[in-house]
Every structure is written in C-alpha cells, then in structure tokens.
Amino acid sequence: MKKKICGILLMLVMIMGSLTGCGSKESQFQSYIQSLITANYLGTSDEYIKTTGVNQADAEALYLQNATRLANNLNAYYGLDITNDPEMGPRLIEVSKLIYSKIRYEVSPTRMSNGIYYVDITIYPINILNDTHDASVAYVGEFNKKVSAGEYNSYTKEEYRREFASGILNILEEGAKNLTYRDPQVVTVRIIEGKNTFYISDDDLRAIDALVIATVQDSTDTPGTDTPSDPGEDNTETTERSWG
Image (tube, rainbow, N blue to C red; front, side):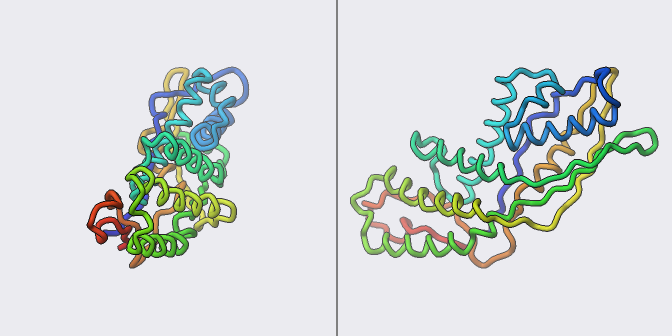
C-alpha cells in the first residue's frame, strides 16, 4: 500500500487578530499571516502574541502541538511505534521541529478584490521524504538482513523498535542538512473580518499546511506500517520491515 504523509491540521481557526491603531489594515493582515506561520512552524511567537493577544504559554503549546502532529505522522509513515517511548518519542518531536525549521515561504502584501481582502502565500514544499527515500529503502534492506541473521534475537521489543527507529531518525536528521524543495505553490487566503477582529478560515489553514511538506512521489518502494514483532519470536517474516 502506498503511503503519503498526512497534512497537519492547524489549531488556529478560533484565534483572531485584533485591529489596532498602529499601521494600515493591509499591513496588519500581512503581519498576521506571517506570524501565524512562524508561530506554527518556527516557534517564533512574539509577533503572534502581539497580533492575537494569546499568552506566551499558549503560543508555545501551539508550536509543540503542531510539531507533535508531524511526529505522529512520521511515526505512522515509517511504522516506528515510538511516540510514547520515553527515549525516542522526544527525539522524534525534535526531528519534526528540525524539519519545520527549514520552511520556505513568502507572504505577499495584502490586496483587495470586490471589497474582500486577500493575502497570497508562496510556499516551497519541503522535499525531505523524497530526498531520503533511497537511503531509507537501503537502510530497511540492511536491517532486514540483520533480522534474518538473528542479530536482534536477544533484544526486547522496545530495544528492537528503538534500534530501527534510531536509524530512520538518523537519516531524517542528515537529510535535513541538505534538503531540497519542490516547485513553489501559491495559496490565496481570505481575510474574514469582524467588527474589530480578523482571521482566516479552517480550509485556508489546511491549504497552507498541505503544502509545507511535499508528499511522496509515486514509487514501487514505499514505507509500510507493520509493527515489529518481538525479535525473539519464531516468525522471521513478520519481524522484517517491509516496503511496498
């Protein structure tokens, strides 16, 4: 079964910007979109706090929640089963933050059409899943050989999963150093205005997020999500990792 990394749903639809006397509406709308993205993907929340009025703790929680959602998707995509592991779970979240730190985007000036304000966002999708695909396939192949040779028969299930996951995370960390980007895509978001507030829709939030990380291109080798069995069990076929 071919897999694609799922989009991460942003939890910002009910957080609104507040119009102030400082600067034009157009500049405030552009600043709001800029801060919205940085708060979610970079953890830079000062401008977001200023624009929306949320507190520091809530802004930090928002960033952690978004990184955790990516971690959960990576966990499922590679079949790691480590999100609740006290050792590997935090590392997976740090890898997710590292990937998000590579975000590339541009927020254009606000424009008006038929009395409605719009902001165009150019996003360069992070291509790390495709960049690291061959290395991941090769790693799984080598890991399977070790499983077949009985090298992990003395491992507990937790040790076995950590061993496999560590290799995948090493590949992602290395891939983040020199990752590439797909062709830029433009998302146009509508500014929804209240009396003294403004925000963008949930659909627009999803549209932004869907482009941040490129999905996997068609391939005959894609990660499976089989959970590793206890390497001590007599079932070599089910303990091996599989692709495709």
